[in-house]
Length: 121
Image (cartoon, rainbow, N blue to C red; front, side, top):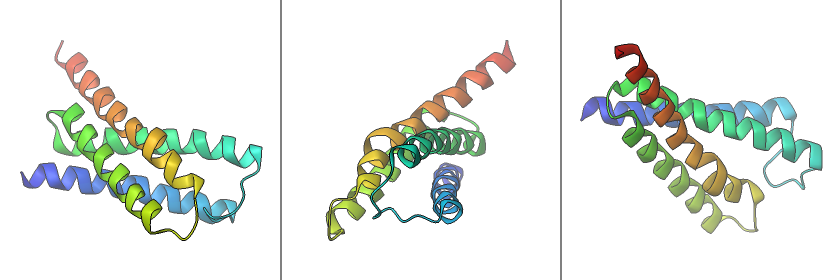
C-alpha cells in the first residue's frame, strides 16, 4: 500500500511541478486570457505532462499500472475541481485539467503497463 500511495504522490508531483515550470517559463498565469498559440502549446504540454505523470506513477508502483494511473487521474481532477470551486472567477486551466490532462494520467499508466507486458514476452 505504501508503494501505491508513493507512486500516486510522485506522479502528482511530476504533473504539478511540470505545470508550474511551464507557467514560469511562459511567464503567464492561469488567470490570464490565453492567446490561441499559448492555448495550443499549453494543451500539448498538459497532455504530455499528464501522460508522463501516469507513466511515472505506474513505474514507481511496478504493478497494476493502469489502476494507479486512474487513481492519479482522480487525484488530479479532484484537486482541479477544488481549485475551480474556490476560484473567484472561471478559469480555463481547471477545466482543461479536469477533462483533458487528468484522463491522460490513466493513459500514461496503461502505456506503462503495456510496456511491462511486452518486456515479459
